[in-house]
Amino acid sequence: QMQLVESGGGLVQAGGSLRLSCAASGRTFSRYGIGWFREAPGKEREFVAAISWSGGSPYYADSVRGRFTISRDSAKSTVYLQMNNLKPEDTAVYYCAAGGAYGNNWSPGRITSYDYWGQGTQVTVSS
Image (tube, rainbow, N blue to C red; front, side):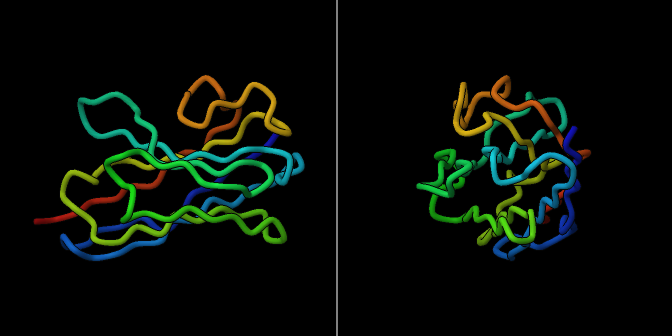
């Protein structure tokens, strides 16, 4: 089993920044691709960003590209999501997830690629 714990959410004004953290414990963190997803009220969970187990080129949803940056620190078993120039439409519960050991059967934007999920952290952007 792997446990994932998100932190760093909060309330911020439009144009502001937040950095989310996803701390992992349990299974070997470095083997897995890590993704961030978000779920707004009344909407389906959607892909935000992902990074492969090898830390190669990151993946981003079009809606956040250029504003969000995903990174991983394997020594700390932590993945970060730096969110800049936040907009009210970024308001959601943000979840991190792990899956696709060594890249096997891993499609970064596909929810079913992920086996382990955190509990989520709320991000609220006021206008």
